[in-house]
Image (cartoon, rainbow, N blue to C red):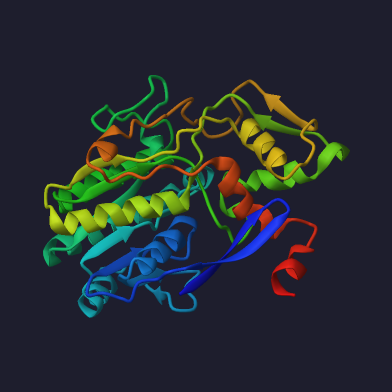
Length: 331
């Protein structure tokens, strides 16, 4: 039995969850110190899998430190733990950083991915690669799995190259494309969604200008993690589960609308939030890269995305300035 803290405005509670005993099935989750990787690792642990997580610069606790660019270290790791499934979450996923450091991003997003996929194929391991809606240009949504990619920025190009390297090295692999993500964060800067929170909190003292042009589909990492486990479990039973899948929330929002929704969820004012209706400066991003998720649903591998208003409160409540919740929970 495990516990988690559930929050809604005015109510905090400890919730008990059943955790299955570890089974013979093993999973290796790369990038397990990151936003999505943490959720994926926890989901498989909850499902009773023998779950191993790797990290590099943020390796701590039970996470294994592994440089994914070191092919011999990767091979040794797989030989030691013999997973049935690899979920490859590790990536440089910040478009601005990728533009500034394209070689380092290509090493992780492409070369390390290919090396890992090659080892997975050699060992007969199911390989699940996490990709992005940024492989599309956003001009003609929604996008199906077979629609032609046309990334607008280096991040999208590197992830598309990672997809192609995945299938070149491991033809039976699975690629899961997802949009902008949020979840339980170690700091609000960890997600492009939760990073909006400081601007929401500052109130009428200072206006906050936010993009109201690019259409996004903020998706909760816990839902993506559940989909990853569904794919993994089905893949071990059915070798035809391979190729590209899409998963996304259904709520279409600009960053301005996300911020207003946060304010509403916490009963905060939103009049200081100013919508910017022109494309923001910086790295080019797709206008609307909505993903068509019908293939996932037709195969019974999807989950019903949880509402943004519910999940964003559970992600942000630790960052409230009013810490009276501590007394509510622990006293």
